[in-house]
Image 1 (cartoon, rainbow, N blue to C red):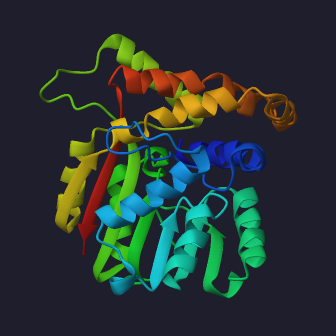
Image 2: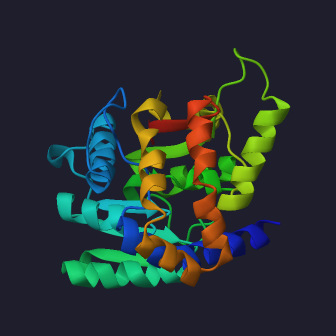
Length: 284
């Protein structure tokens, strides 16, 4: 089952990444619209703001700059190149998409920092790196793709150097301990998101915290930025159906078309409180 999932994820991003870059740019993740989600900001700048806010939240600055960074789920290298340039750091990015890895390498060359960055096709549940290799593991919206969340965090812990930091932002579902189990309609909604976006399942943020604790992480903290990022999906929906985007969708194939037609699933999920944007920070 996992191998089939990995293939589907790779094929999904192989088909859709070029269109995303053409229409929406190199950052394949949410934007940040202020703590209350009210900032009026251009979408690409909002995506950069998300990176900066995550770094600030995680206490990562130029004064304690990481020098060896792993970007798990690197896409076409948006975060990797940004972090390498900001911190003059060595960055390794991994993805399941060969198309993404190739394009990320091209973008690093265009940026003139190819000697600082390496992109690989690799499985985050079995990373091809030695123990204690990185002083920052950065995972921006890749946890939702992992079929074994515990193994994923175990691998993040393994490859971190002692004292190294994990900063993870991922799609979650609402907490159930206080507000009750997921309803039948909520489960149906999530399953449709899983199907369209090639996800095995998502979990509540509290479950990530518990897993991180079992893995041995220290200084664990978390936050919920759902309100801060929720406007992103409506912005993408508004831009998805202009002539250039529609033409690109047709060329990209049915799976990409279906994902575009299903953008409302995420917007609705946020508005209903079902989809949450969870943050996890920890050290080794």
